[in-house]
Image (tube, rainbow, N blue to C red):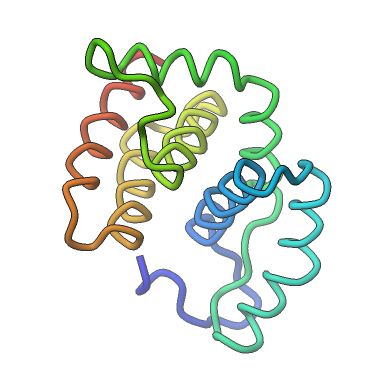
Amino acid sequence: MVKNLSFSEGKTSKSVSRLYAVQALFQMESGDISLDEVRLEFEKFRDKENNELNKFVRADLVLFRQILKKTVKNQVFINESIENSLKDGWAIERIDPILRSIFRAAAAELLLKTPPKVVINEFLDIAKAFFPTGKECKLANGMLDTLAKKI
C-alpha cells in the first residue's frame, strides 16, 4: 500500500481515496460525525496535509465522495450483506470497527461496479496496513471474496 502513496506531482490516486474512505467511515461511526463534516475535513485538510507534509499523492476525491455516498445510501443493504457473510451467531458489531469500515467501503465500491479483483486487492492492502501481523487479514480476505461474489 505504501508504495502506491508516494509523491508524484499532479497525479491522483484511487488507493489514497480508498484509504481515506475507510478512515472517514471509521470516524463517522466512532465520533458520530456527519457525512458532510467528514467529507469536508478530508477534502480541505487531510488531503492537503498528506500531500504537502507526508508527500502522498493527492486522493481522487471523486472516488472518495462516491464511496462515502454509496456507503451511506446503501448502509442497510451493505450491513446485511456483511452480516449474512459472517459465521452463524456473529453480529456485525463483533467485528473490529476498522474492519467494518473496510468491508463497508469495499461493498460500496462493488456497488459502483469496480471490478471485484481490484476491490479485493485494494482493500486487502488497506487491511494489511492496519493489521500487518494479525489474523484480521485472513478474515478480510475471506469477507472481501464473499462480498464480491454476493454483490
